Image (tube, rainbow, N blue to C red):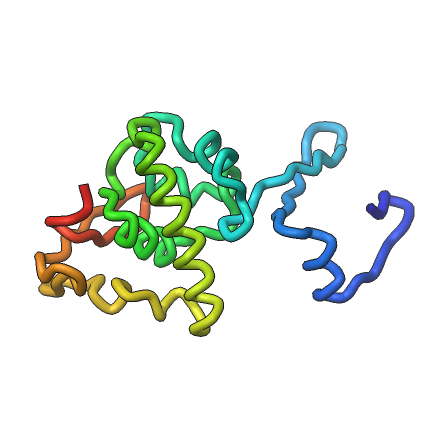
Length: 162
């Protein structure tokens, strides 16, 4: 790693190889010192680490998985898609999810991320086109519900996501 007195130049590919599945963030503290923190990314996070980082707190699970200090790479659309795939209500407290629900969500986030990469973006998710008033769940036909969760517009299936 380069210090303040030296610089390093790497290509985007080299940087991706160096990261090897971890997103990095820098936190500037008093005295101008840098604290390098590691946040596992959504595609590569181990199941046990996911359970530990996501399955805590009283805040909504959608807000928890979108918190980039908890899990890197999950935005609004990916969160809605993954929660829909996992059949979880985005308003539920993250700490109230049991191990089986956390494992379902872990698998759903990874699958939705892989699908988004393969298909050219998160806008290609199966539920994304149904995130509008009057739309119905593409899986069961129930009305889609809308609310604000974690400051973001959120859509979910009124029947299946509990």
